[in-house]
Length: 324
Image 1: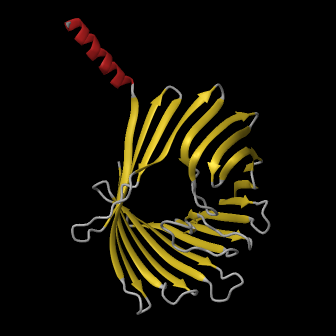
Image 2: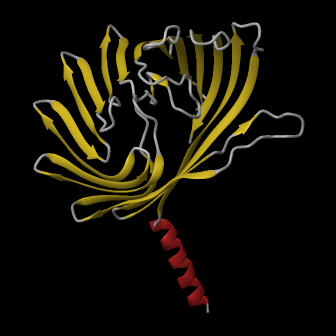
Image 3: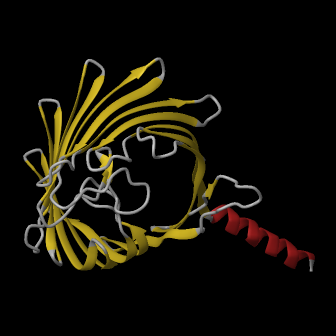
């Protein structure tokens, strides 16, 4: 019996030692004050908390990822508390079959400057062949419906990528010219007047980072991205929802001052064909890592919306965040 127990314990310890599991996450809590210019709208103060938990397990060339979100809550009101619903946001595995990389499950296809992300079930295959990266994806939702076939490579110092998908295409190109990083993203659509394009430039001069960006949409579609150029998602956390045909321009200056990262952004949305529909925002972001391991971020926004007499405001947001 003693030998049997010893063997069971040894097997258990061996399994624990061989397991490659990591649990990480992040949590941030915010205080937000909104000062409306209109006297018909009351100023507001609010507290919010947002948490995420990430679990990753690995064995050989196979990795399993489960990301939990919705660990959120709003301010207390008496004895009542409104909590977020804990959800499995991502649940997928990556593995290899020969030289082919496989990713299957439910996961986010990532925000960019033209469209918001979409979380759905997908299966993708990718490999490299003769200097070309080849990919195939089949999904069931949003920007990844049915089949997508992609190819990417580097030509003369220019990284280029092309994806053919149901209803349209994705074209990417990026390079560096004289210390200036240049990137282009195009989403041509089979639907009339629904193409979207974005170009970004970035460089650094005398310790100051400089970014310039422009996102344009034809009259049958709208910018809905979430990037440094602005949060224009159609739902959740949005700063503004552009109308069809409205274009976005943005500039950012950033530097470090006394251990603080300081960034200034100006973001403008044109009114397109309708007078009085312009929107613009000046944003200042100050970020400082604390000795405790947390990060303090203070954001000030000055928002001017020509389309409304009640949405002009100044916003002060103070955030404490920690990753573990």
